[in-house]
Length: 596
Ligand SMILES: Cc1cc2nc3c(=O)[nH]c(=O)nc-3n(C[C@H](O)[C@H](O)[C@H](O)COP(=O)(O)OP(=O)(O)OC[C@H]3O[C@@H](n4cnc5c(N)ncnc54)[C@H](O)[C@@H]3O)c2cc1C
Image (cartoon, rainbow, N blue to C red; front, side, top):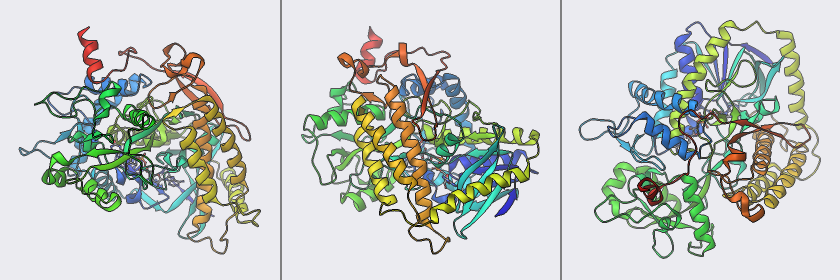
C-alpha cells in the first residue's frame, strides 16, 4: 500500500470537486491538494448537464425573486439562510466562469443570454447552447491545470473513509489502472461524489452515479438528510432514459397527450395561454414534481401513448422551426434523432418521467461542514438545505459552483489548523479495510450476480418509491432492499485473475453503496406521512397523507446508519428567515390567489 500525504483530499472531480480544488489551490499555494476521481474528470456526470445554470442577471430579475422561486419550488423545506447565501453568490460564480473561458450563449448585442426554466418565474438560466455542463466542466477542468499544488489521481476509487475520534484522517482508494491500494492521509477531506440516481432502474444519470460518497459518510455516522426526495424529470426518452432538457420547454416546447391536448392545464398549471402571448408561460414551465405527477394522472386516465418502453406523452417543438432548434437545442435534436428516431423539427418527441436527481444527501451546514470534523461535502452528494422537497432546474449547476467554492475555502481554514495525524493508527485502519475488500476475491458462494441484484433494486425503487407512494408499497420496498443487502454481502468477484481494471470488484462495491442509500430513501419516505414536493403519498386515514402537513412535517428527515438494522430516523427543524410557508401555487391558481 502506497501512502500519500496531502493537506486536503477531494473525492470527486465533477463540477463541485473541481471548483473546490481551484478555490483551495488559489488561496493556499503551499497547500497540497489531492484530487481523486473514479473516472477521468471530464467523464463526471456534470458533463451531461444540458440546460444551464441559474443566477440573477436579467433586468426583470432580483435576488429576492430567485430566493422566493427556490423556496416555493422546494415546497418550503429549503433552509432559507442557505438559499439567501446561494442566490447572492451564484451570479458572481457564473461571471467567474466566463472569465475562465466558459462560452455562455449571448444575445445579438453581446449580453449573456438567459432562458426560462421550470418554476422560475423570470428568465435566469445562463446556458451554452444545450451543452452547458460540458462547457462548465471543461472550463473548470482546464482551469485546475494551472495550479501546481493540485495533483490528480484519476481512476482512483474511494473505498472507505479513515476516521477516529470523530475526525476525518484520510481516504483509502483503489487504483483502478494498477489494481493497488493507495492511502491518502489528509486532515481535511471534501466529498464531491455526486448523486445516487442509479438506485433506480430508469434514470438520466450516468452509471457511475451510485451514491458512493453518501454511503461512505453515512456508514461513518454522518446523517443523510431528506433522502425521501428523489426528483423525476418529466421528459426522458423512453427506453434509454436520456434527458430532453427542460430548456426545450423554456424555448417554447409544449407537452401534449394522445389526443394532442395540452393536459397540464388540467392540473393547476394552466391556463392555455391567450393568443398573442408567448406559449407555455406557466404550464410547461411548472416545476418538475408537478409535471411528473400530471403524467401519472394522465396515464391513469388512459390518455398517454403506449410504447414498448412504457407509456409516453409528446413534447412538441415543431413550431420552433429547424433554425432555432439547431441554434438553441442542437444536442437534444441529435439525441431525438439517434435514440427516438424522430426529427424534432418534423415530429413530436416521445417522453416520459425519469429519475433525475437526489435532493437529499450528506447533511451539511451552510458552509459545507458535516457532523464529522474535517469532513466537508458539496454538490449533489450533499444536502446543504438548498433544494428542499424539489430542486428547481438549473439551481444545481450553480450549487456546485457556490458550494464547491465554499468547501474549498472551509477545508483550507480547517487543514491549516488541524493536528498532525497518527500515521500508524491510520495505516492500521486502512489495512483492516483492505482485508475487507480483498475478501471479495474469495471463493464464489452461489450463482447470484451484481447485475441481478442491481436490477431488482432499481425496479423495486421505481415500483414502490416512485412518483406516488403508500405505506404498504414502501414497507415492501424496505423488506426487499433488506434482502438484497444480504445477497450483496455474499457476492464474490467472478473474475479474480487480475486486479487491474477489475470492474467486477468495483461494481460489487458500488452496489453496496447504492443499497445503503436506497435503504435510507425508503425509510425516510416511510416516516414522512404527508405529501410535499417530490414525495407524494396516496394513503393515510381519509387520505390524510395526500396533503402537505406543516404542523407535523415542516422538518428535515435525518437517517442514521445502523449496521444489520433499519436506519434510525430523526427530524430537525427547517430554517425559515423571511418567507413563511404558504400554498404553493403556479399558473392561474397563483393569479387567482393574488387577485383575492
Ligand atoms: C443528464 C443530466 C442533465 C442535467 N442538467 C442540468 C442542468 O441543465 N442544470 C442543472 O442545474 N443541473 C443539471 N443536472 C444536475 C447536475 O448536472 C448535477 O447535479 C451536478 O452536475 C452534480 O455535480 P457534482 O460535482 O456534485 O457530481 P458529478 O459531476 O456527478 O461528479 C461526481 C464525481 O465524483 C467521483 N466519484 C464518485 N464516487 C467516487 C468514488 N467512490 N471514488 C472516487 N471518485 C468518485 C466521480 O468520478 C466524479 O468525478 C443534470 C443532471 C443530469 C444527469
